[in-house]
Length: 174
Image 1 (cartoon, rainbow, N blue to C red):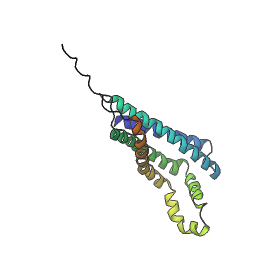
Image 2 (tube, rainbow, N blue to C red):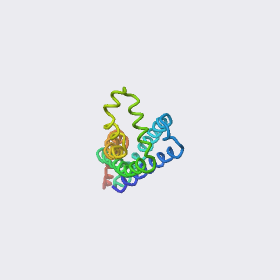
Image 3 (tube, one colour):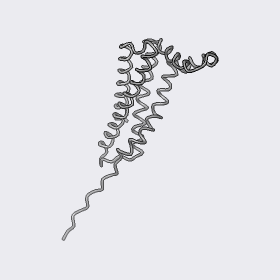
Image 4 (cartoon, rainbow, N blue to C red):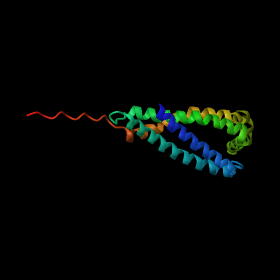
């Protein structure tokens, strides 16, 4: 669990740094730049997540006395890494949305209703404001991170798993 926490924390810190850099560079100030920044952030975060989930699985395998890693343990490790990442990211998302950049959620709301007709936007306004707000996004980080992490781990685990090494046969006596 210590390994999963370490790598989950690394993923969370990298995601937070990317988010803060986007904010400091003014990429969360208007809708067009925000869309581009979010796409880049999602791609970079996916690559970082894949890399550190893989490293966590390899670390668990290396820590095993016989250098083995079952498929289930690999998937469990990746899921735990993602869970810790989501748990550590959620407070930042709340802080970012409520204190650092409260206007960010208005942009998300505008982006969401841009694809709706005016009647649809008017009918769904209250619900859409809730689902684009900081509390909901933080909750979704906690819920969706382990789900997505488990799906990714199902694939990564195929490449990282290793059967236990058989003990060397004793030498034959003559």
